[in-house]
Amino acid sequence: MADHQRLRIHPMEGEAPAPPTTPLVPPGSSRSEKGIPLHHPPLLRSVPAVYSKPRKRSCFCKCMCWTISVFVLLLIILAAIVGILYLVFKPKLPDYSVDTLRISDLRLNFDMSLYAKFDVKITANNPNKKIGIYYEKGGKLSVWYTNTRLCEGSLPQFYQGHQNKTVLDVSLSGQVQSGSTLMTALQQQQQTGRIPLDLKVHAPIAIKLGRLKLMKIRVLGECLLVVDSLSSNNLISIKASNCKFRMKL
Image (cartoon, rainbow, N blue to C red; front, side, top):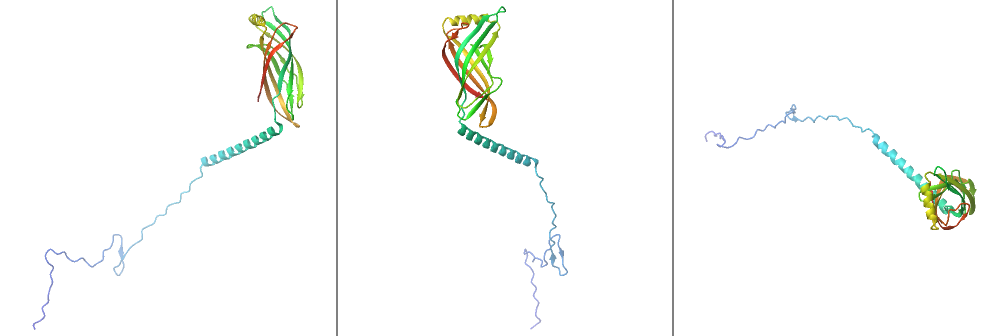
């Protein structure tokens, strides 16, 4: 046969050409000697370590919490000690009673002031079985009519033992300015045979527990009295008496 005819294949119209056989190289890459693309690893930047500084506020909060905890603990210990002492000694307030009341003098002066002098006998009672009482300096006893103080006297200093009753004779004296109105009111009240008087006690005392002498406290007392007369140099009859006492630090 004739020479072989070479066939040529031409692409059809409208058909896209074949893709190139050469591999694509990404941007930023290089080729090796054999044409193989080489990829470079990304550059790593070192980031400096950040260290947080201790806060002053945190230290302050810790100190406050520690202080409060110690304070609460001390309060608990103190409350426990007080509770134990209370159960062991069972403290009670001293009480007082008015035995007699005598008016030595009650008159108007030339300057229209009212002068009063009373003699009062009271009994101080310590009902405690294991507690002694020291009556300190500064104790006062006073007699009032309505809101006016007629006279005042000092309580003696002494020590009162366990379950002891002590009788005290106290002399009271005082002077009230513009006493004419007060004298008139007392005379009118005397005609009824019932004169209200208020006897007040202010006694600073110290408690003795065993051999310990504890801090001072104040006993405040008030006795509402009703007497029949205010005649001088006569023993006055006390028709009614109501006494109340409380403690104050």
